[in-house]
Length: 119
Image (cartoon, rainbow, N blue to C red; front, side, top):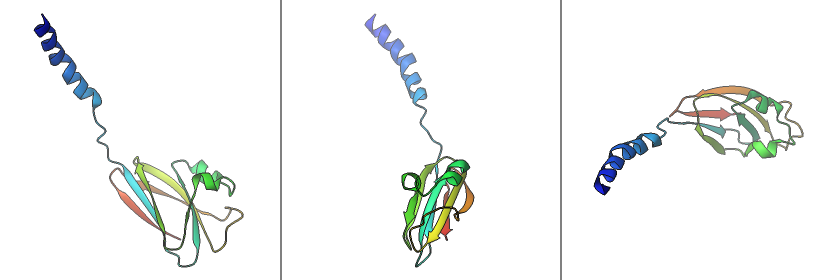
């Protein structure tokens, strides 16, 4: 009887466990930004939501933005394929507002690395 139960368990439960895990085989994308300026610092915001990028203020920037010194780069990894919005402001001094930020979008596919030059 024990052998029968064990055989049934192996026959039905083990294949179910293997297929339930499924494994996430979707590849993700990467967007890398590089500050090509030799003098200006770039203040960068990126999000899948255009509202987040356009609604970011200098007060909320430290929580969601990244600052790139001249020549520095940063990458956003593990991105699902789709459209992403970004805004940046290049300045020699710390800005008091992000009103003049340039806003753009980029589309990345799974497994793709997109390199964006700033400013």
